[in-house]
Amino acid sequence: MIPELPGSRRGVRNQFAAASREVKAFFDPIPELIANKYPLEVSLAYAFARLEQAHRTTLYGGVVKRENKILKKAAAYFAKESL
Image (cartoon, rainbow, N blue to C red; front, side):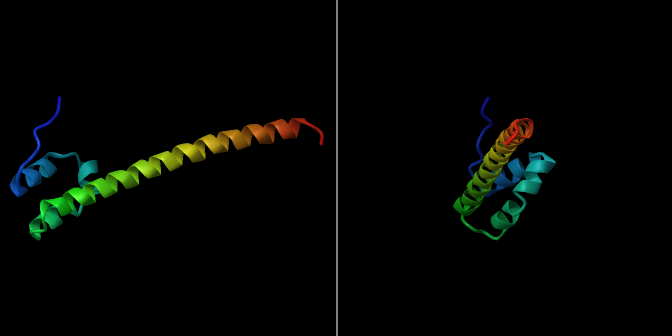
């Protein structure tokens, strides 16, 4: 089910107010951007930038975790082998 999208500043503020504490913390500057009468596109651009940042952080964490597993396996292999 797709939630109804807000079409005004008030709607965006209401959606933000109804969001979870984690979402509010992650997108903390949005209410200030709206209150300072910046175009809604500025808030949208900020939201997409933060989402992209979270996406990259998640991907980086996954790569580091995978590479650590590979390094541990390689270390265990070479520890068993006499060089």
